[in-house]
Length: 342
Image (tube, rainbow, N blue to C red; front, side, top):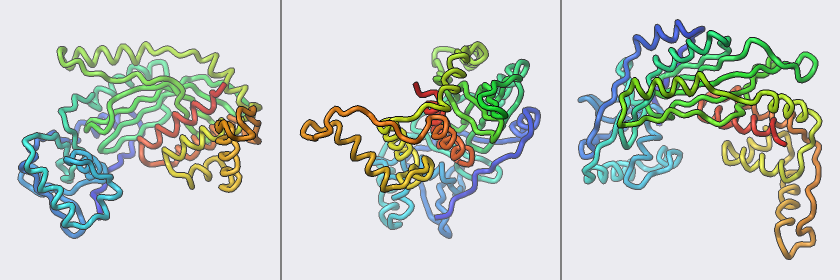
């Protein structure tokens, strides 16, 4: 199948982002499931909404598969026979429920489906919050697409970890007005040498209180973001210690398993920079320690040649070149946790 493209806007600053958002038109349509009409036209999946058949983006098709009576893995749905997919869609019409469709009007395409109304933070309001933060910070990165908004702001001063290798503390804000992810903000580290980012704090999330107005919820979230606190001295000390800190084999296994769940076993080996046979031997050795019948039961962990500084930066380097913003943020969170591993 071929999917509609999600447009990525190249904006230099918040003023350009505001200008684009003022002209962007995204509609939220309530669609009863019994009215669902799905076709594949010239290998392009389309769904009838607002009287016309509109093409689906990859995110739209993925979320459509999740709202089915029995959710279908999207990578499987792309390859299943058309007749099977048509039968699944026909079964939807027997359900007396409604879903929310987020669609772009120009050019027309469907961006996302949600089962319930999603009271998301508006991108324009998120930009206004960042405007306030920029009174004390500088804009480092801005990434704006049809489905996501990411803005990263750095402190004006940096910390030198190695000669010529400086790190800035940053604040990252993420939002999706179409319900792909709820708005949140995190504290991060930005490496000046290669512009890699690592996320190191818990998320401050947008939580909509239905008993209150949108303006009340917006002010509540704004206050949380502006008043965020983080113990930077502890992070800098952990980062300096990570340069010489050797990872144990159990720590390498835990990081590899986290990467395997996020990307794939092959990419996990590639990111860490480990041969698959060596990794298998390490996995076997670690697993043996937890088998009561094994000779290695309860043996101590063994140091490896990898340092937390090396592995953490390898993960964030891979994340930097990742286009999917959800995957990129997950990898940057993992990289940050490795860099500050104690």
